[in-house]
Image 1 (cartoon, one colour):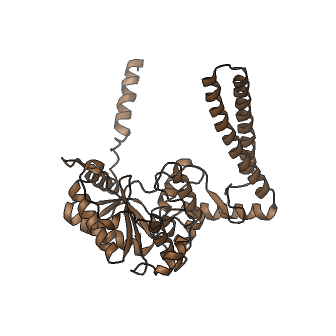
Image 2 (cartoon, rainbow, N blue to C red):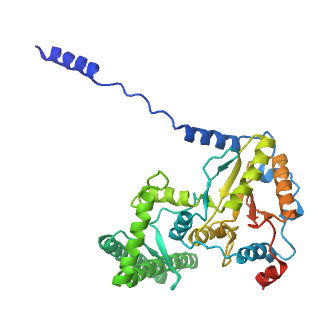
Image 3 (cartoon, rainbow, N blue to C red):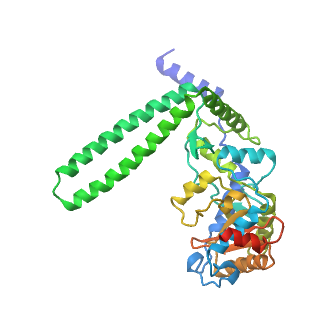
Length: 371
């Protein structure tokens, strides 16, 4: 058999034996979500979002004393002192105890629109109440040791950069350049301080046998939960998977608030044929602190409303004037009846806090919160 014939024979054989791979079938749930998202974002053919001419009901405006808005929510929480999750571990504990319920990414009349997307991809951490610090959770001693080596390397690099910039600053006669270098030096020093703090905290907690074993045990518990969380597996060693797991944990809320979401969403969907976009549900204190860096609406109080699990945010950035006015009118009615506390925020959101017992807190509690 010639070489040409052999090649033709092998090609023909391969064509007979190799199966034709069919394209992967699209996930119907993902398809449904994407279609709902397009419906939320589709053009209205008229001014929408901030450009729409709207009438904000007085119930959704700030009080004369702006502190009253947060005081009402704090006072409502203080009646029951529901647990506030400081970190994702405490949030997972609340979920496993049944204190919170999950909101599916797509419901009959709503969809989660970016809930938890701002969460980071960093390793999970443990909040230590005694020190008020967050400690990175490591899988074992080898992982901890590798992290400490990485901290040392990072510190050496940052300190070298700082020394080089300091030399340039001292040698420069240009006032503008000296000012720019001073700004960069300040940022570098902040980075050095942060890395140093993480390294020192690690040494303090992980070199103590009792604390070390407690932290390793917390990691194992979290990893086991993530490996099969309601039928879905998440890998804590993979940054993207960690991010997805954090988003999933942040898609929970207290049952009373879930019922309120479903009620408002049903009214909106019936009127306009679109799902109601929900952008925030429960938050951990860690996540709240992270949001403060970029979101002016993230409350800077001891008990931010979202950490109670009773608050949610509605995104109105795509809505027409008719949609926004309808939605605000319905929420204003709920507030007037004493079922919620709400505010139309500056950044295309309506914040809604659900009163768990269907009525606002006593004025005595509000007065105490104001103090």
